[in-house]
Image (cartoon, rainbow, N blue to C red; front, side, top):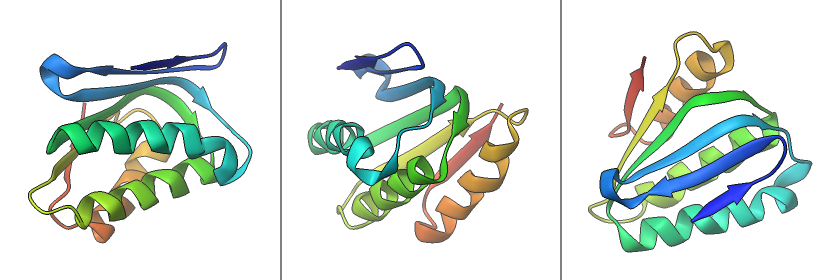
Amino acid sequence: MEITTDDYRIYFEEANKTLYFRGFLRLEGMKEYQPIMNTMLEILADCSELIINLEGLEFLNSSGISMLSMFVMKVRSKEGASLAFRGSKNILWQTKSLRNLQRLMPGLTLEFI
């Protein structure tokens, strides 16, 4: 699974159960984020453990953060599901926004590199 544009790249590596986000994600509203959300939900349907690696995602707008929040809530309702986010401590939006996701799902693992 891969989504590639001039601004961003999203791809899944099944071997390490990691979904990578790279670049700048600034889509307009939840409607434009829906294909990404659908892809994330498809991956979740096939594996109960998922790592979302955002280390290379330099920018994510508020609609993108809302999409991640909605995804976390869906994972929370899936019995036996495990979710982790890996971010960069050098990207300000990640250190602030990812901690808020942990409030939605206390079992969520956060790692900043």
